[in-house]
Length: 459
Image (cartoon, rainbow, N blue to C red):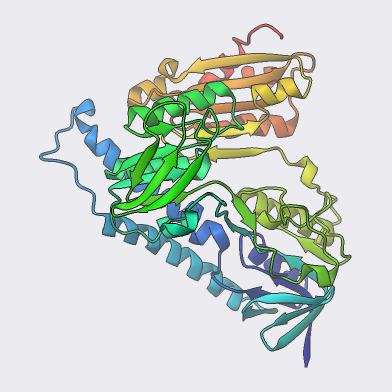
């Protein structure tokens, strides 16, 4: 027997539960199907547990620097990894339980646990049950890529999921991939006390950022004792009694590194390969991401794709905005679009990197004539007072229109201070509006108007 609903949502990540709330509030009957963990990547293997670990690592780092602040700590600073891991796990469990109880208590929402697969564009099978609806929303998220590197199947390795299950300290963590996920784990485990090496095929870290940002992040991490192996073109693995032998054919240094633990952090892929999308007429691109239009509709009428699986964003905030776009169009007669969204994200090393809009290189590549403003954190009172003066602020302005094109704040509070700039960008206000604002002292944000008042010449 087929169960009929007004809408079916596949996946209880960041977009799915909120969409269920809006649809049921509008009087629709909704089935929400989750095959594994309520809350998706953010709650279970992403933002919440990792940032909890970052906080523990920061506490250890600050404790070691206590003397810099005139504070005396007797004896060495210790880290109890079992308690660190338990704290992160507790945060995840509480958040997951909250999402699950919200959905299961939601009037008009039927929750099914199992793997949903399309039978056709209107029908899904979950185990022995058939569900049908005129509207189907796919919110299945993604997972870590396991690269096809020589010998990778011969050694034990970890992805972000396995890292969150560790409750002991690695002797030597080798991170394959010098981008956002890899660098966050590298710094936190170095602060916990592990030897850490980052291996990156490219000539610099976080290649999508401007070279000056990449260089500054590298310097910050190297100052904490993290080894960098860049230009590692021929990465391979072999078994070793101490864990794994990692081959790194770099232009400098030893050609091999012995790791007790290997973290693969080289990207993510969508969970779309076992949904029967072809039976529904839902098109995917060459990497498996579901193809969507500007309002997140797929090639199959009545089917939408939200979150990481659509390739239009890889963050919790973009997934939630996907929900907002779909709800606005369906329920509010408000034609919101993905293309209205400005790119914004953060890298949670310490100090964090807050990013909004275009970087300098991106702006030049897009043909803009630009003006650049910069200010080192050493000239920001708040950073000096806190004893955390690493990094800098940088803003990119269109020289012809005076519009702010983008900004980066690598420094204490950068992930928060960037929002003032982002808000100006959404308001489409000229940079002078922000330049003439009077900010609170002492903050990081108060120096943004000053930086704008010191813009360089157009070029």
